[in-house]
Length: 182
Figure 1 (cartoon, rainbow, N blue to C red):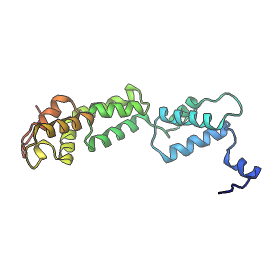
Figure 2: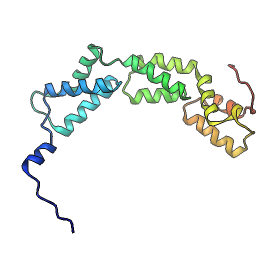
Figure 3: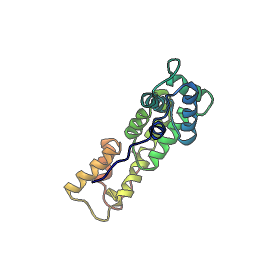
């Protein structure tokens, strides 16, 4: 039978950090933006979570205001984040719908996400073919797929955010076929 030793008051005080105040919230925000590429929405949600976890001491907390200040200082760039994230997802073979969902989940508004979404729509065929190459679908398959395999491949392309007509066109392409813009 394991015996647990009583904890000293000093040990329990170490485990529970003190409640946050405005200066500590600013430090948390700076540390977060120095470590991660983020958006105002994500930073605000992070700060609100930290306030819930640790409590608050002082004037009413304003995580949205801190996030706005970080953006005003240039530490947070929503449009730049959207462009980088959209381009990265496109290089991995994801479609415009998946890019839009990811940017919405990151807390970006439509205005900041618009250039990245336009780029994702413009490169739809290229990113779909990139995913098809990686998954050996359609023109990149070694042999024609049977009906069940084509259904699974179609599902993969649709879950990646590609439009159904484009996904169907790629899945139904013969191995070695060359697809171009229509």
